[in-house]
Image (cartoon, rainbow, N blue to C red; front, side, top):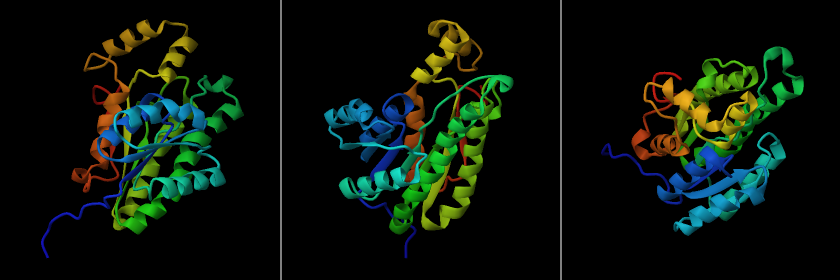
Amino acid sequence: MDSTTVSPDPQRVAIVTGAARGIGAAVARRLSSDGFSVAVLDLDDGACAPTVEAVDSAGGRALGVGVDVADGPSVQAAVDRVAAELGPPTVLVNNAGITRDNLLFKMSEDDWDAVLRVHLRGAFLMSKAAQAHMAKNGWGRIVNLSSTSALGNRGQANYAAAKAGMQGFTKTLAIELGRFGVTVNAIAPGFIVTDMTAQTAERLGVSFEDFQAARAAETPVPRVGTPEDIAHAVSFFVSEGASFVSGQVLYVAGGPRA
């Protein structure tokens, strides 16, 4: 028997959550260009249309699916639909997330619960549903979106806790799923230009342009990040060449931390 790496099933299907815009949309487009059929998941299936159209117009294949990632039956129905219409998913990118920023003494219980619900419960439910297909196939990739906020960030106790939790979740799944040919890694973006970071600037009362300039000035690579920067990293983690890379957290932040 030779040592040639076994290729994954030619029917390659990726699920990207929170893919209606921003990082998720960029990841969906990149995975399509890498040869995957892409399920574009977001809370409102109508909001998925621009990403689906972008993939289709570039010659790819995409399916928009509305899902509440923190609701078990909704998640199972979404994954079942993807398997039925595109094929069994072998790649999952847990990107869905929200922010409810505030200082601790002002943060409500609802704001705490909402952020952890979407990020952590959502990643748990999506991973649990998708891994069944990956394990059966003997090949799979899960990529979780963490953040440099996992290292601590003023006004984001809920978000920082969720993103730190994603790193522990990633490392544990890597241990559990590796025997089934499934790798699990995380990406921790620094400052990325998205609607979410624009909302942060608005909350702080500064223009988005000034906000970007200030963040670029404090980054070793003196610029802000783009959703495409994260999509490139996802592309690496889901590639066959990354088959011996698992349980890792890659900071895509223009420096060792941001």
